Image (cartoon, rainbow, N blue to C red; front, side):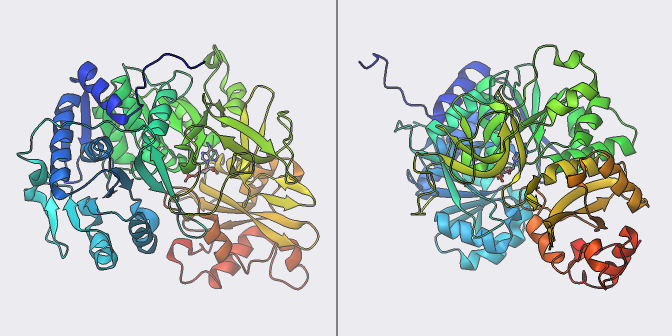
Length: 572
Ligand code: AMP
């Protein structure tokens, strides 16, 4: 028997309408790309969304058309998110850090008809424009006064919307209509397009609004540092408006000083981002003996949350919650909410819990599959391939014919994990990063976490190096804090002190900068390339160079690292 409820579609305009009728006085604050701070209300924003939709319509944008956006987190991108999707077109956010080749590929693959971009990205747009086959119009996200001279003929955003009507007749359509798209960062092969629907986005916005999910409240001031060009800034532009929460956009100011200044001046209470951003911010705050006056919570995901960040924030009175997910999941799959009374516990008892990725959101199913295709028990010990399904998980990539789901309809995340009896997820690695040593699997995340807890280590990455007896052994690569002159053997020892013997790195190497990919994750593919000729110390004993850690760094510095500026090894 069918229920007798209205056939009311879950559309993003429902979020927009709710925000405007209920919270029209709420503020949206932006650090502008042009410099200075912009401030307006949800109500003002809505009027400009209508103006923008009218302008897009005049430009010939139709339902289903892809509209490209390459921009920082700003009020203008918020307007683009809503106007494009709610008029029935698809907001294609482009990650400028993908590199010119991938950017060209994704814009052509998506078939974007219009391209909006921030002035910062003008050089990239100028280089790309001759190769973009489908883009008919460009629009720079600024006003006349700040419009740079350009080789690419571009409309100016503020002129484009000025004078348009502040009303728009937003259409109704099927909730499964595409609203936005985002390409995966593509560390291997070409980036692949994930095409979100209104339904999947509304469901994500609703579940991430739960107290046991992101848990932001009306009294919060929320700062999404996670970029709007990467999985819709974890849907915060939708969930914040649904909850009527004050939004603060950091624009291009993602360094420690700019973030700190904005957090303090706008009294931010809740910020979201990837670990690398928080490591930089914590360094800045500590180096300058600062403290937070309003910050209470930080939601951290995108890669494993290191203990160093939990402790660093804790000292400053800020609580951390970890989330796990991926572009293909809209993106959040789990959040590690705290049980009642959790913060009454001493920090050492809290840390092991906070290092885990958390429990599944409503409508996210998870299972662990062994390599031979059997579902393994949720016992917190048996690790395997993490598979998921749910209404916000993709069913296929855009314009890719290949079937990506298992025969029974699950998506393999490519992560290796355990789930315990309570449903708690622990990611041990990406399947391609896990180190197989003597038949055992070693978690690179555990070793990286141990290394990061050393005060001199700014960034850490572990890769598996070939070994004739063990198959692979871990090599620890670190980037040191500015001005640090540490004893590498002592860092290595401190890592060993925290880990079982099988996980002890065989060696430590120092690089000037650990390479980060387009979404702030460590680029292990790059590190593997650079260290491809590296030989582990116990193998060098058979006729190879010195085995001492610091000596091996010296030796390497003279030899093979030239030509890769971000990896010029330090001769210490
Ligand atoms: P992306 O699609 O770029 O967001 O990357 C998704 C991948 O990032 C996941 O499959 C994980 O490998 C990794 N990831 C995201 N969040 C976490 C987390 N909290 N802990 C460990 N890995 C994570």
